Length: 97
Image 1 (tube, rainbow, N blue to C red):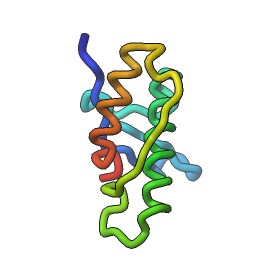
Image 2 (image 1 turned 45 degrees about the horizontal axis):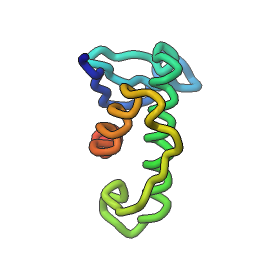
Image 3 (image 1 turned 180 degrees about the horizontal axis):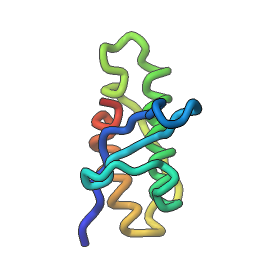
């Protein structure tokens, strides 16, 4: 089973004054609204972790490289979700670039 790859999260202000959140999924740019509910949940989890790392490590050049402990309840309920979370947590700094 191939796991989709996400990168290059950005906000496009050109076509919408409120901004459109765009993320690449397997090198295809998609509006956040085009993602499945599971993908949106995963993205929200990663964004929340990134925000918390930035708040906890304001003194670091790259706050996403901070250390911490993350507890996720019942992530094992869905195998693919478990794999995605594990992989995304390992490369969450790529989303912020």
